[in-house]
View 1: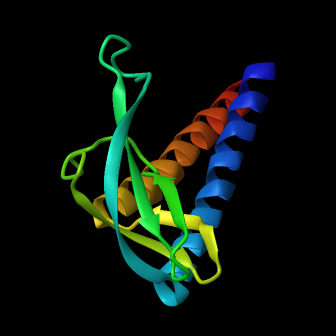
View 2 (view 1 turned 180 degrees about the vertical axis):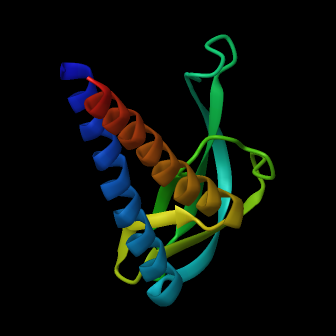
Length: 133
């Protein structure tokens, strides 16, 4: 009985967070300041799919409207099209550079598709487990 409840909580949490991500992305699209940054390095993270092959995430340095320099980590792994030293579009809310995101459609799609899909899968499995026992 504990496992289905845990799956349900994970699924609903992912669905809730995906809703937050959609609102955040729409706000950035509507009100965000767009600038260019430079990929300064790649950070290695462990990969669930293949533990021997770490995932890489791009770290992008950019300057806000006041000239202050900040760094943002791409929201999803994968560095295709983001070589070290290369340019990357960044978008952030005015006066709030901590809201910055790498503004590539491929990164947005990964985040906005993977979260609700994962949430739906966990929630569906939980509901199946709860109704069959």
